[in-house]
Length: 225
Image: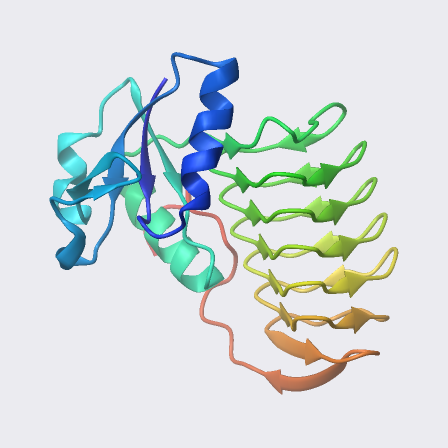
């Protein structure tokens, strides 16, 4: 498989590539995309930074797949992946070999780092990212364009809506619902449902902000909006 990665920033990506290639020597990274023009033409982790979105059409081919590594903002992750999807890019998953996917269901364009525990009947949509050492318990449903930071504990039967952001070391108790484009602050302990477009922080979590929704969902494959 030939792959292009969006976002030349995180050195951990190099270890991910090496771990995957131990099991699949045909996994080939052609290089990185990055819209920071200062990075164009340099090497990152031994791979070329090919350019930004202006070169996408050169690589929209049957045997080239894309992965979005952007995680700091679910809105930016959604917007960049949506742009690529509309340009005809095909997506693949970028998953560390330590992640056991047995009895789990996962879409495409997802980025799962080392040490993620994904229990039975957990589901993840498309274009989501789960960082190192996070527990996704049984029957958790994660939507599209979600980011879950490292060290989180998502208890059984939780539902996380499209575009939600869950900060480092947050804990979500069982059978709760986290709304679309909601934000759970780092270290928060969520003990009740969180509405759409709502930010919660603290232990127990409390509402600190409610925003007006910009996007109805996190579906990168929707027709042009």
